Image 1 (cartoon, helix red, strand yellow):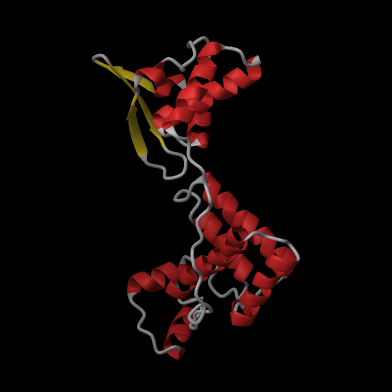
Image 2 (cartoon, helix red, strand yellow):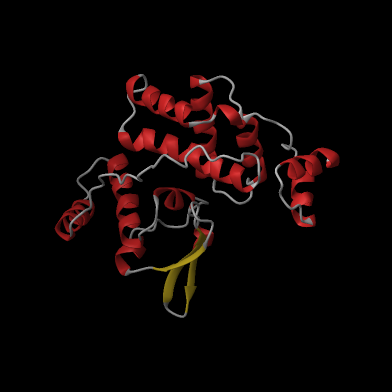
Length: 228
């Protein structure tokens, strides 16, 4: 394996510093020409770095690619393949522009990493441009938020809907993502002096976060009758 690494770098007329040789030698994927094997290698390698959602995205995109092309080598990932895959997502899968764009962004992201690691010498996207598309997300107005809060206070909804509205309003008053609210526990609720705040690690970014709680948010927290 060591000879293969040295030979490959020599054939490509590239310098081989010791740290780069070490990375290549400890890379279990070295020598494989499978684009899919490389994706699986990255999933394992970056398991502790990426969020669960991002890793799930990698796996879903890999599954989607395999359904289109059961096997794929690095040399086959070229402009023709990329454009064919785009056509497949649009015509056969009926993907929206945002969805098929994410599929192409994923291939580009993997290709970028492969290019950095010397797995490929010619970047398949060098003549292709992908424009990041933004979703058309709506936002609540202040009046709408006030109306929802009043609806909650009136307690006219069925119990299950009242509970959903409770957590929705809590997310609005704390600016928390759905997954972070879902994973929140009473242990994350802290008090210092007279200030109540949430102390947790964001699921998506893996960043430690502290959010002071306003009165509207505190009123929505259920009693600590059990771990939830």
